[in-house]
Length: 315
Image 1 (tube, one colour):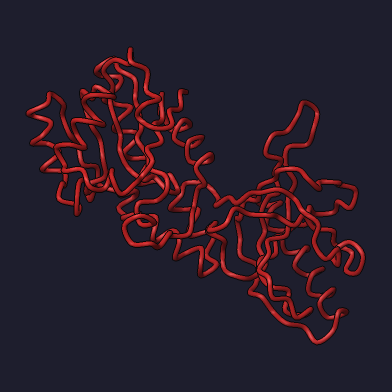
Image 2 (image 1 turned 30 degrees about the vertical axis):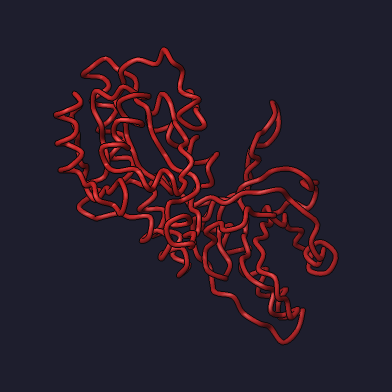
């Protein structure tokens, strides 16, 4: 899979292609429907599929507010390739880009650089200055410039899917519901850093404390069952472990900083500091609680670990 950072990165010899356009944060099942349609066109026409995605999120530039990020850029590109992209063009979303008319966007991005023979977007896709362009406008411009345009319903199993819905489910702790819309468990990742070391030294449950990218969409405070994964396992290394994952501020210790910590079940021999790891959230176990004593907290943690072990064994 090829990755291009900006239109200037697209090779001058790039020929005709099927182009899918969108933010694609989450690469959820609705996005996957867009990619499936684009891949189908690619097969019919004998052309590669190029995906245009935007970074930063358009809301950051247009409204000064960035929605919680479901899939950081590297993960998004990886998933787009997994679902059929032959090339991904990461288009910097700037004020200048947002000022293009719909026709200027089509000509500069889709025609001059990517040589689109077919364009696939979500049915609610808007483009151009002040979101003046929609799917009908795209189709009309396609008739002029020589490409077809499809607006795909972001629907799976009769259910409309949006990144906003996924974020809402995660904020409420419904990681199973979010996984249904995503088509896989929600994943966050970062470098394992030193924390307060209470898990290892005081509580008996050594945890990997994740240094996440700012703005990452993190599930609501509580305890979850899931998986702790190596980002880049080497040959012979264990790639992942079942885990109990804690999200929150550690209120029993009057914590103020919100953290994500993962305990690999029944493992106290792992040295993960400095490594890039990810966690996948699968089942909500309980909400965040404040306990009156450390002993009460340890009892609850043992109960949490037993529950995580049970649900992950079934999984």
